[in-house]
Every structure is written in C-alpha cells, then in structure tokens.
Image 1 (cartoon, rainbow, N blue to C red):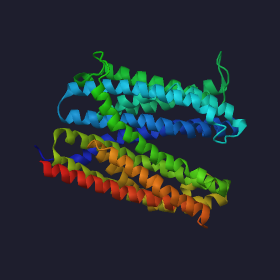
Image 2: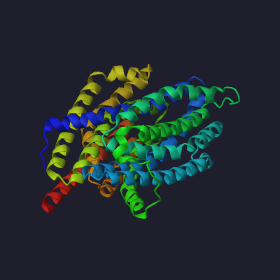
Image 3: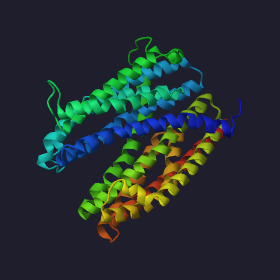
Length: 448
C-alpha cells in the first residue's frame, strides 16, 4: 500500500474541512437570523423562541447525531472500493432517518404539554408551544438531510452541502418574514412563525440536496436513487449500533453547556447574561475543531476501509497537530481581542466585566477541547462509538456537572465555578479519548 505524506494529508483535511466549516457557520446563522428578527417584535417573542429552541435543539442534536453514522460507514466502503455498498448504506440510512425523524416529530408535538412542568411562564407557553408544534414537522427532513449530507461529504463532495446551506440562509429571511408578520392568507404568528419557516426550509433543503445528488454525474457510481430498496434488518442494526452512541455522546456534550445557564440562574440576570456571551463566543469557535473532526472521520474511515493502518495513524497525527495549531490561534484571538469580542454583545459595564473574566476560562480549555473532539472524530472513523459515548457521559455528567454545581452554588466562585467544572470535564474526556485512540491503534497494529 502507498504511504501517504504529511503535506498530502494536510491538503486533503483542509479541502474537506473548509466547506464543512462554512456549512457549520451557515447553519448557526439560522438561529442568529431567528433571534434578530424575533428581537424586533418584542421581548416576549424573543423569550418564547429562547424557550422553544432550548427544547428543540437537544432533540434535533440527538436524532440528527445518530445519522452521523452514515459518514464513517460510507467512508469505509469508499476506502474498500465497493461503490455498490455505498448506495445500499445511503438508502438504508434514509430509511432509519425517516423513522427517527417521525419519532422526533412526535416527541416535539408532545413537548408543549411539559412547558408548565419545566416552569415556563404562562405568558410564554402559547407561543413556545406553537413553535415546537411547527418545527416538529420538519424533523424527518432534518434527519434525512443529515444522512444525505453524510453520504456526500464521505465520498469527498462537501461543497454542494455548503452551497445549499448558504442559499438557505437567504431563503430563511423571507420565510420568517411571511410567517412572523403575515402575508395574504397566512396570519401573523410572531415568534412561533420561526418554527413554521424553519420546518419548511428543512424540507426545501432536503429536496434540493436529493435532486442535486440525483442529477449530478459525480454521484453516478454511488447513486442511491437509482432503485427502490426495502429495509434490511442487518444494516438497520449496524447503523443504529454505530449511530446511537454518536447521537448520545453529542447530546451529553451539548446538554452540559445548555444546562449551565440553569445552574447559574439563582445568581441573577447579569451573571447569566455574561455567561451566555462567553458560551456564545466559544460555541462559534468550537465549529472550527468540530469541522476538523468531521474531516478526520472521513479520512480515517477511508483508510479504515482500506485496512491501511499506517496511513490511518498518519492522518490521526496530522489531525491532532492541526487541532493544536488551530487551538493556539483561537487562544491568541480570545486573549488579545477579548474586550472587542464581548463589546459585540453588550455595552453594559457589569456584564462586560464578568464576561471578559469568563473568556479567560474559555482560553484555558481550547487545547483540551480541540484534542478531545479530534480524537472522537478519529474514533468514529474507526467505527468505535460506544466507548466514547460512555467517556463523554462520565466526563460531563458524572464529573463536570457536580463540580460546576458545587463551586458555583456553594462557594464564592459564582459563574467561574461552572467554567472550572467544564474545564475539568473536557480535560478528563480528552485524556480518556486519546488513550482510547492509542489503544485502538495498538490493537490494530498487533493484528496486522
């Protein structure tokens, strides 16, 4: 087998990573557009969207995260030079995605019943409930789109997904306007209109990507839409066995950050606002290592399919080195421009003071965060997802969460206590995931 070079792998990683990164930023822009447009209506509408999104995102992340299994499976088949298997994997993934999307939609239809239980103010329950009802109809499109996206990116075509995401940003604005402010027979629904607009947009994106894949010659060798294929229990089990731990691992990580605001709620509005600013900044920056991790899943998965262990280890080394460089650049950006970045969010002196202090804690975990997500991406490429799921759950919910609650509620640290808990959790996850990656590589070397 040919031995790859560092320069070649860097080029391949960035060729995959940059379009994926643009896609990630574009998808984050959906929420930004919703927030800005709702903010021009009223504080009540903005709060209703915050409640709705807070409940929708964990469900969406869990179910679409399961469909990430499509990426390593397709990458493995691509490396093994079995295009007919790629088509089967994609068709079976679409079946799984359809059923998961329906389940997620039903959960979101029932979610408004729990708003009183969650302590949501009565003034917000109607709009937040309608938002959840509306956006739930888009969940089958979300999961099926995730499957097709994983297929396209895994065979080396991430740009169509990127282009579609950028176009969708522009389409969302008039859709939001129509449903939020009303037009013709469509009544003004306020913030709840964002749910309808987003659901419609998700279906439009699914149909557009499916049509592009069907028409474009680049997909001819692995075309998933050339024939009808019924459910295969063997593939369904394999997809779920690989994907469910991925979805849960992402859910555990996302939920620990989203619940931090709840932990800090007794400390007052200024502290919560400062925390949200720091979280928003780090969430945007996290898309950089996350995009690298997706690219690593594809490259590692391809060599895993070829059973080319030497090249697979080379890709992992290049990926972790790249993650280190990117994390250092992020740390420098946060350190030198921390005041300017916070100023983009607020002009309040007290909020700024706390937020800037919290940014220093964000700087402290950039390296660990970059390494842990890159190691997780490599492990997915090797189709090892169950152990990372347990590692993520233990690191964030058994270790980080109790530490954060104790330090923030029962000491004088305040918001800093939550961030120290996050740093500890990310560090534990980093060490365990890299150790797992090392042991997997050692095991494969002994088998060859």
